[in-house]
Image (cartoon, rainbow, N blue to C red):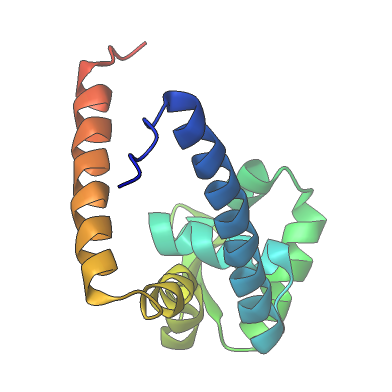
Length: 155
């Protein structure tokens, strides 16, 4: 009976690097498919995502996050508003500016779990035994990362 070779950190790093590269490529393809399906540019998606995560905001907030000029933000928000993905409401503190918020459709587009779709397709190809092993390993890695982040002092 052949003895399995001892697993080394270098062996794990090689497999991890390859897996990480492949998964990153898959996530990027899933994102690009999502953008094509909804006819969105990356900057338009970023705007929707910023609002999804932080709530209604001013265009100056978007410009700061995306490092774009005000005119570019106006153009992008105008196009999203025309498509019914965002809405503008007057800022009561400054009537020259508007809060930008997601509409229901904008929320649906920005919160689509494209990473889950990609992962789901991958996991469906695994046997029940492989799923169980992977689940246990992912839980262990999650706990280790949580413990590490709790041990790291905040700057």
